[in-house]
Amino acid sequence: MKYSNPVVRGMYPDPSVCRAGDKYYMVCSSFALFPGVPIFESENMVNWKLIGHCLTRESQLKVRGVSCSGGIFAPTIRYHNGRFYMVTTNDSLHENFYVYSDDIYGEWSDPIIVEQDGIDPSLFFEGEKSYFISNGADEKGLGCIQMCEIDIETGKKLSETKVLWQGTGGRYLEAPHLYRFGDWYYLLEAEGGTEYGHMVNYARSKSMWGPFESYSGNPVLTNRNLGGYLLQGAGHGDIVEDKEGNWWFAHLAFRQIDRWLTFHHLGREVCMEPLHWNDDGWFTIGMDGIAAIDVEVPDISNEVVQDFSYHKTFETLNWDKDWSYLRIPDKENYKTSKHSLSLRGTKHQLSELASPTFIALRQDEFTMELSLKIKPAMQEAGISLYMDDTHHYEVAVNGREGQTEVSVRYTIGSCASGEIASVTLAQETVELRIEADPLYYYFFVETEGKKVELGKLETRYLSSEVAGGFTGALIGLYAVDAKEQGQWAEFSDLHIIHK
Ligand code: 6LW
Image (tube, rainbow, N blue to C red; front, side, top):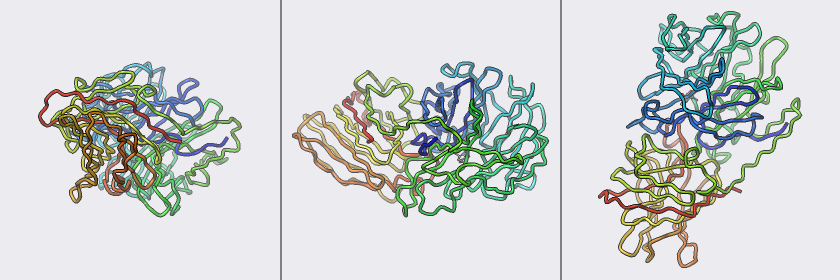
């Protein structure tokens, strides 16, 4: 079997995977986005389809006012006795909770809170008992993995929280999962921070409470020594066995923009690695402990076809699944139809931690061509390449009497904001184009049948290395109206093409 990583592209970090019958399900972090915690389905571990979200109501998703990298962190999905559980942290509230559903395509329960601190929670089931695992600190303040038994109906703790393992000494011990394979309990985690030094380690024990013996080959997966390799930051992941008895590791990694340019703006994405068992009950991951872009798994014979090319339009995208909002949207400001979108701007700007009128897709490939028609009415409407509230680029269309003003703007922290181009057109509807390659966004406007270049901006200033945080670039369609006149901007003829 041959395939390419990342298998899921765009900002879908911290993957967790489970098997239910013949299908596999994966969830990822969503931070301040609404809806929260995307769910993917697969039949072969390589081709994943977005099927919905776990957190679709404000009672589950308390993200009003949170920062772009706050809110919902690293989820875990588990399938137990016919029920799906998704456990996560609302980092802004320092709250760990889980929701459940008996139908992966349906609604999920209201949150059940667990009174154990730390992030990256996971669940482990054995017999009738349920256990809750997270990262934390031991009595000396050192990072550790900790666990308690819980009542899965109520979330109440049935035991004290106990330290399981302190890891191998790397910074930011996180992403724990406990498994029982055969006679051993395996405790998996990530260290090194979700950056270039990220790595995966594990240990095993005959008891779920330890003591755990560290694998002598740790880190079992890392790309930290692969300078110049395009796939970096391999870490945080989860183990799953497929229905044929092959073992897999789903994990995050990111693509840097160029061999010697250590920037990434698409966020952390999902990779799959084969996991191989040794005779002594220890396992290895990836190609000699490395997450490769081109993966070959000689012992699996099935063929998979990956096609990353696409042509997205309003018609081919699904308004409920594919699009995201910032925090809790006021749906009254959005009208969607098969062929178009109408947005009513409010006074909230993209630089606010509110919910501006903004509906977005993840940018999931470096190269793309985007075109869109916008009729703003008497307000501002446009396209934002949005990393966070203080790092974003816009091509903004302002409606005036009988004309429009099109400008290309940048906001790069508090050190730089301004515009690189501004043109006034004697037309009420304008057609915008953005072309992207790994290094630049190029902006154009179509006027009198001609494509006029408005300039270009570097992708790197929207990268995680510049902006910080945990997210990736979004392609947002937005409207702002400081006077809140109730005007509707019309968006039509969207085409996003990746060849
Ligand atoms: C997540 C932590 C991490 O909770 O990034 O990769 C944090 N690691 O495990 C946010 O995505």
